[in-house]
Amino acid sequence: MTESSHASGILLHPSSLPSRDGIGDFGPAAYEFLDFLFAARQSLWQILPLGPVGYGNSPYSSISAFAGNPLLVSLERLVENGWIDRGRTSILPAAVGAVDYDRVRATKLPLLREAASSFLTTAQGNARRRYESFCQDNAWWLDDYALFINLRERFEMRLWNQWPGGLSRREPAAMDKARREMADDLDVTKAIQFAFWEQWRALHLAAKERGIRMIGDVAIFVSYDSADVWTHPELFRLDENLDPEVVAGVPPDAFSATGQNWKNPVYRWDVLKQRGYDWWIRRMKWALETCDLVRLDHFRGFESYWEIPAHEPNAVNGRWVKGPNDEFFQALRQALGGFPFIAEDLGMITPEVHELRIRLNIPCMKVLQFAFGNPGAHIYLPHHCEANSVMYTGTHDNDTTVGWFNSIGGDERRYAESYVGEDAMGRHWAFIRAAMASPSRLCVIPLQDVLGLGSDCRMNVPSQSGGNWTWRFLPGALTGEFSRKLATLSQISDRNSEMPRKRRKQSKEEFAA
Image 1 (cartoon, one colour):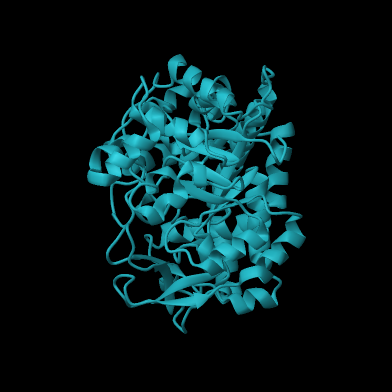
Image 2: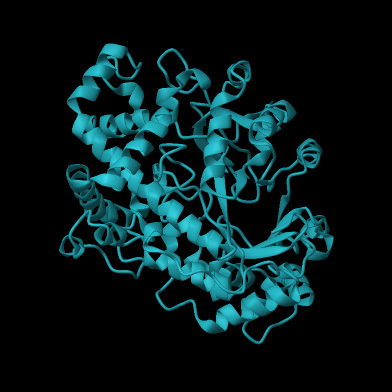
């Protein structure tokens, strides 16, 4: 795909796939989705962060910036590769219904540990060599992550700064003792991560064979209760007790009257600068090994971020603080060789943020649902979109297009109806058509909008503490009618013309784990 070509695709996190394990994963349903994208002439698959979920089961509150979420590992693939007997997986939830995280953890994690233990006992030859190479090549994050996860369980999920015996401050004697005592558990954790990354890279390779690029997602901040902050406390604004001094969020806006207090610790950008932004360079290199493009969540925080005293209950009493700006991105450019990024620049965006993005030549985001509220919102109308942008009908933080359209009235509804018109398959397809026809180089549609689903199927309600991130689509929902409709729209809007007409049949070696 050339830099000047237009492309379109679908936004769907793997957890929303109708897999057999009670949560979407990297098993057969993921490959069926790739086949749907190929038939629909879609060359982009956008996902949310892949890390182990923390507070509220949010992928944006991960306990590691580098590890993969074990719940996304396909036990079906592990059965096929001899890690575990098929009969042991019969207790897993069905392929339908919302994700019940508590139930999935209770049923799937013990089976993953059992499978990993079996692998460690029996693996030989190429499989053993791949595992050992994985552990050696990724020791820079894997060793600390494995220790963090197992210490967290040992101390009943208490925050890491409350761990006893010098472990919170990573005293060498305490760390060595813990590693000796938990050696077998550490190996199991590493084997599960090996399975995750083997399965993800097989899926990524399958996408490439179909001419489909993966768009990943990197949250600017990390969770306090994470392996990253425990391992590198010097990079974050912490006090003498290793508690956050200040935390990140956003001020009051259209999503929330009291803003959003994310409770993520704020970086010591001065320390990162002195170190040549080494931690961030490693993070972005890892992200670009994982995906082909990366959405930078909360891009505006690199120009200025909302800093909240840690004791505040919400985000009202905060202040804007200057971020690392151009110097940080120049360090990334030198290390990465370019900027294969998408800037999430939604919300309260200043001219300084726009100017930074334009200087860096990173595409911005345009959301069609935002376009009809008032004349100032017309910047989101498709005919106003610049080529260097990504057009969405909505994002994971928005209501579905059907739900949103049913909730609006007055001038906003009248303007929307007048602009997008109608479609024989439903009004949501009129919005998809308008987004596809925009000048934006990339266009991404949430799968809920393709399926015409209502508000009960949205992925996230910002500032809502529970009930998010659970949606899954039903088996059989991806019909030929939908793929033909998308393919026709892609062709008439000159998107995805460089996709291969046929895909190569995949070999068994690509399903290694």
